[in-house]
Image (cartoon, rainbow, N blue to C red):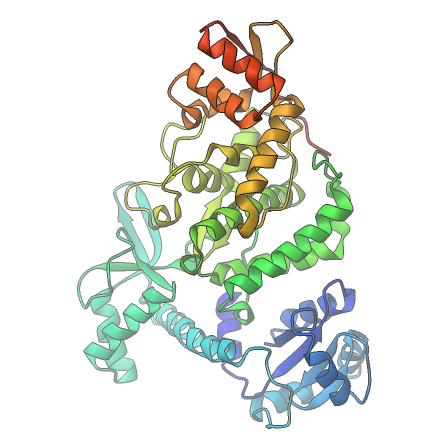
Length: 479
């Protein structure tokens, strides 16, 4: 589908533009309809660009309804009127007009002209990939135990560009490096390897894995502005949290989320992660993004794949449920153990999530913050509560989440007792909290703060007089 969309987009000289609003069912329906018809569009979100509302009113002679759809300068109206045009066989004429006529200067402009310029550049790179595929340049390559799909040799790409586009060898090599810089291709074993006119192999990233739940993002979502995508995701996640997750974050109404238009918009926004540049984010922003995406991906996975019913299904769920982010796929297991735990083995794993040459290692945290364990929710009642995290407050938010878990059943001790009852989370991820059980208890006491429970645990550790009892984990769905 993505190949078809890339090819179709190049046919259009003009522009289809849609003024939208968050929470507008018709806005979502209009965009979905245009995508189903393979019609490229530019979206102007009036919540993000409120100053454009006056322009919309002027162009529509005062019509305040949303969405408003424009084919170049022709105002089609709302989603209902778009459907009327299709039913009356008048839509094809407008599509042909946009294909053959550039947007006049008097037409509505994209929300971000720079983004539109970048879009044309990225489109050109992906169009090259389409032609490479059609020319039979992409092939399968096996390295040790890994089979890479859709790979090609640098020297064959250079020869092909010279023969088909009359491009010099030097220019073809520059183009190859531009494709690497934009996350279109990468060396099959060394992510830092530049493009060279040699026998080295490179793989097309967006053609590596289509099993991600956000697969199918169209060309119209590339390139994605990271801050804009994060803002959109936060907006829809916050809406879903407020409507369908209990105030304490412990229960989720999955059936209601599935039917909520905000979830449909979240799914569409999540597709933009495929062209998301992770390298543009700072450490705190990356940490926050992966925590929030983990919790959202779990909910998305339960809705899309169903509830795991046994131990094996749970294992496969966390291995198989994934998103494509920045041209790489990340499963739940890879986000938790590969990224947030600095590429450590999971409790049920023999190997680390990422091998030595895996390009995703670049995004793994350098120092593990054990507090992340109390921010991740795995859709079970034994998990910590679901919360929304922000990069500017992530430290204090993780502190609150940790204390809430420790005081909410994660750590219990009776007055005068030497037995500390702990969640299995501390057992499974014990190495993150220190090398000994004493280190673990000291960590817990420190994060309980100035409290009777914290002081009690400190006294037990100092006296080396304690017993830990692991509380049975509740794997039942948190609905």
